[in-house]
Image (cartoon, rainbow, N blue to C red):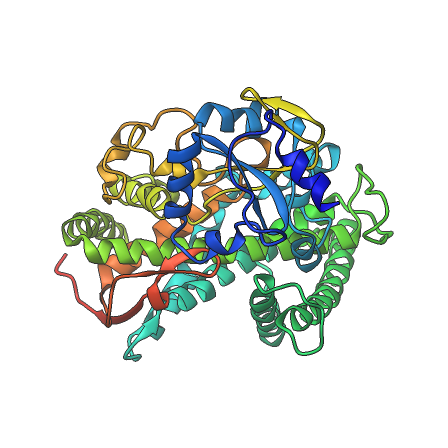
Amino acid sequence: MLLQWRNFLKDKRLPPGSMGWPFLGETLKLYTQNPNTFFSKRLKRYGSIFKTHILGCPCVMISNPEAVKVVLVSRANLFKPTYPRSKEMMIGPEAIFFHHGDYHSRLKKLFQTSFLPCAIKGSISDIEHIVLKFLPSWENTSTINTLEEMKKFAFDVAMLSVFGGQLLPEVLTETIKQLYHCLDKGYNSMPFNLPGTPFRKAMKARKVLNETLMRVIAENKRRMEISSSSSKKQQQSGGLLEVLLAGSSSKDHQHHQKPNYDQLSDSQVADNIIGVIFAARDTTASTITWILKYLHDNQDILYKVTREQEVIRRRRRIEENRGLTWEDTRRMPLTSRVIQETLRRASVLSFTFRETVKDLEFEGYLIPKGWKVLPLFRSIHHCEDFFPQPEKFDPSRFKVPPRPNTYLPFGNGIHSCPGNELAKLEMLIFLHHLTTTYRWEVVGDDDGIQYSPFPVPKGGLPIRVTSTMMNI
């Protein structure tokens, strides 16, 4: 069997590259060093398309923007989204991330109902309330771990996006938060389902989380039925849960059965809620952590961002000391470019996974059915041809729109991140209050990157925060 595999890999129609060690492939090399180093070495040796073997799978990595467009957009039907089986088990196999075709299309439409700009405008005051409650907790602490604090903040916003204005009991919210914490520990661990392992603990937490959400779903369905039958309908709380339930069926079915494309079951709703909160937390938290790192290291940019935000704060005070509005967030061009440049420079998502649905001829090479295809967002974002001096943090580069298919922090095509506008909005609101009310300094060694699995500043960026009164 091993001999047949080696002979197969000698097929000259395959892309160039190394498959590494038997079984292990090049997984350790990828996950124990700066991914920029891993990718750049192979790009220089093999070109913009090469084969490798990671996470137990034969893969083809690509960094040509036009080739990436083919995979994600123009011929996306030939490259289905794929994740390791353990990840599907952890989140739930009926979550939007793991599907394509009719079921995915229906879910995408429902998600857009909740996450398009026209839908999230009404959540600004609620997000601002979270920020104003959250930031003061930093003042009496000598040192905080930015990444862990940002996970708490992003989790609260994710809960808001799912449950809308509905106030869950504090005990229930805390229970869900603790279950996600356990899920997070096991998600990136080795998938050994043995007693005492992080993976086994995470799967147990996932079961309890599912049962908890099922009870919440049942209660919401009862509330919606009472509201619809009442002559005086109750005020709807909004949120993704309500949108999904509006398209759900009262009869549930098991995960392994064929999905009903016209209606969603309770299990499908639960899987998608779990997936959305999970996806919205770590990536957003990592990005905001990098923003604070880059602003700390570039005081001239921080000064200009603060001035931009002070103008808005002054206007708010003049106009009856009101809260932020959607129009205010449109008057933050520099802050928005800081977010754009952070998404490029940090490239929290280095790549995404796709899988060929049949043998393909691609860029002059053969890619066999079942092989993983990985568009390398990080390599494109750090390419000198598209972004001069790519290692420099320079928000001004986004005064001019980037070349098509070269800026992909949220992916591209039908499987692009549906919550990208909400993520940017919560970052703008957070930065408005942080820069106009607080100052921060990095504690200890402020260099270095750790990978777990997203690249984040060393130690989660420990900082010391002080409040400041602005003369505005």
